[in-house]
Length: 267
Image (cartoon, rainbow, N blue to C red; front, side, top):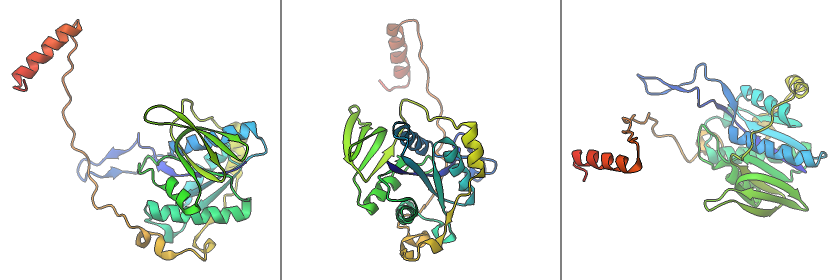
């Protein structure tokens, strides 16, 4: 199986701090990581390759030159090839423009690596949380899709996907080619081996710039190709913590709660 995994380099949200005066994100010194949900997608592809060693995994990312660090991390873990999409004309793209650019990039990479049987993505990026790019790529490609996947298993002519649902998990069969977006499964992604890490550090990752897509519609990329824009950003107001009621018994806690609500004229 020939699998493409779309990944994004994002700031580590656990390290982000807020400027107390400007109320904006302080990005200086914040480390960048592979988007965690994309790492789950890569692990799903790696598990398919574990059972079918002839499978190939290609990773694709759109971003600045430094995004190659994220791609090299993917190469160290499980990927066989990596490509970066980068160019000034792509800057400021919203999810719709990004998915259109990635669609064109996928078709270009297929000319080099062969047609992909499946495109795997994380369900969303932790710096945007829109969960739109994966499904939009599926629409551009005209492929069937499954979202919120936990696992994927190769079967004849397709995949069987374990999908997370509101009322429980379900197994869904899907024909290839297809798009699958992944959420957090019950297991963690694998770590890179020393051998793969050394090889990844030496890897030369091709960059696909604007000139790689001579037929792309420039009215659909960048800021002018983005129908959505950030109107305002703000830091949510911090609210005071609640009151913890922890008496010796549940009955005593209920009596205490009733007394506090009565004092506050709630009841």
